[in-house]
Length: 261
Image 1 (cartoon, rainbow, N blue to C red):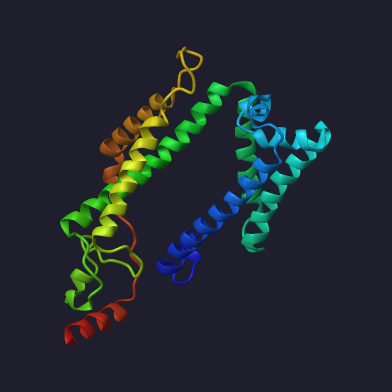
Image 2 (cartoon, rainbow, N blue to C red):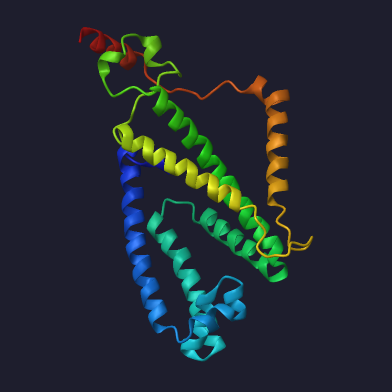
């Protein structure tokens, strides 16, 4: 969505920060309220829905005393989240795509009814793949930070058209954490990602048996091996790099202006 946002290099980072702060504050208040009205936390966690990872269903049941009402409240909670996303995105957003994506996520959740182990594999595979992508980008950014591979936003550094459009030229955007603080944040992010990545492959229970084994490490390894062979054998000969859209006149005027300084 960043491609459709004005001043994305500033707006998107600030929206992420403000969203994290707002959700964290509201989430903490919600947790306090839920724990305050929960009659017995141990009973909720030991309930069938609590063991499946959905303790709020048992809280609804204990509060209302009716399975039907608890089901209705659960459905309202899910539908309000889906329609809240749709209405928040606006009428120009493809609603069918959002609905299909939501239904797909719901159907994946149904896997838990048939096999908890299979559902755990799907979740751990998603988490490990997501954090692996984070670790790769964060590690490269950390490397560039430590080696000085990213220059500051000083227009006098660009003096030629070739340098201006060179893929090896990296310049800090208007929003970044500079200096030692940025390196510290990068190091923490990489270490945190590695810990989550490793523990995402652990089985959910001991002793480990063939039916409870977490096979996500095997699936992720197979995907990585296939992708590597695919790139080495065929894809690297077809990939020509990203398409850079620019106006020659504006680039020429920018270079002339920078040279004049």
